[in-house]
Length: 112
Length: 118
Image (cartoon, rainbow over all chains, first blue to last red; front, side, top):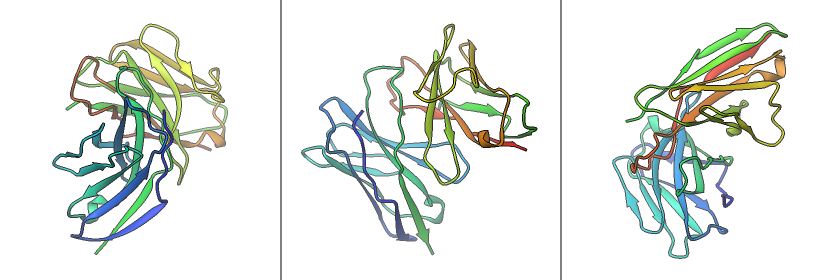
């Protein structure tokens, strides 16, 4: 699986959009980008995933660059409860038993 | 959606004893589950892949005799930390994926078990 690089931490004001970048320059054509988050002392929670196209769900939007070497997770209106560590993971989707390897993630601090 | 339950959520044990952690898929069958360990302020580290009806496969550097994994049914995997030492104190998390689904939520994670060895 391709390696990902994320900033260590970011701050965001409550109610504003949080844009979390992820670099995955060695991503291959059949690897998906997944985003998870982990609130303190809990298990990771799925947010969104995508291959090429931008994706949106009730939690967030995922913007993937045309060359697929980077992506941005957007939380449109961050709340205090969005304070968490956000992990960007690249992996093959094809196999049911494919493993998830976590990088260091980005600690998002949402401030009042 | 799929739910993965871990038990216990917290456990304190004496050095030298063994402790068992359970991971259950509540509303689906999981032929494969994964075990992670997380030290404070660090990321999740994959320890092993638990396979129903067969031996677990361990990541490089993880002692299989130290961390015994049993996946005896399609809804239960257990991790036993044997002869625990204080350095085994950590947050242990399991995950599973409902096979054959196209929802692609990836893997569902349990809420974790905080192990403290004293």
